[in-house]
Length: 151
Image 1 (tube, rainbow, N blue to C red):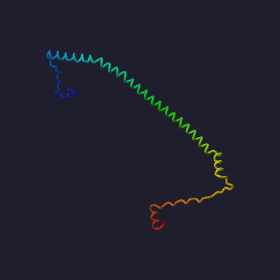
Image 2: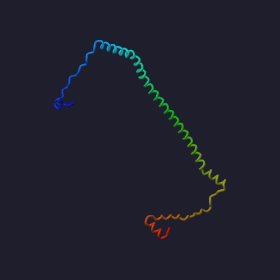
Image 3: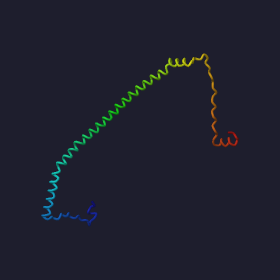
Image 4: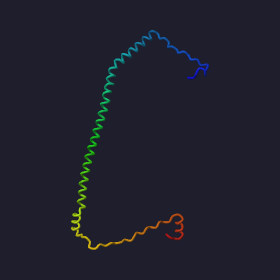
C-alpha cells in the first residue's frame, strides 16, 4: 500500500454497508437456506457411507495389489530356481560327456581302429618366415615412386 503522505490527495473511503433488505426478502432467503440445509442434512448419511466405503476399499485394494505383486515375484523366483537347477544338471551331463570323449583310452581305441600308431622317427620341418608386405609410399614419397617408375 502506498503511504498517504506520498499521495496527499488520497483519502480512504468508508466501507459501504449493504442496503437493508426488505422483510419479505429476508424471509425468502432464510427459507432457501433452511431448504438447502435440510437437503444437505438428508444427504449427509449417504455421503458418510460413500466416504467410509472408500476409506475401507482403498487400503484393501492396495493390500490386494501388493499381495498379487508379491505372488508374481514368488512365481518368477521359483521359475528361475527351476531353470537354474535344470541348467546345472545339463552342464554336469555335458561335462561328463566331454570328459568321456577326451579320455585317453577312447582316443587310443579310435586310433587302433583307424590303424594309427606312434611315429618311430620325428621330423621337424622348418617353414620360411613369411615376407612382410612393404608399405605403400604416401605423400611426397608417392610422387618420387611414381616418377621413378617403381611400383
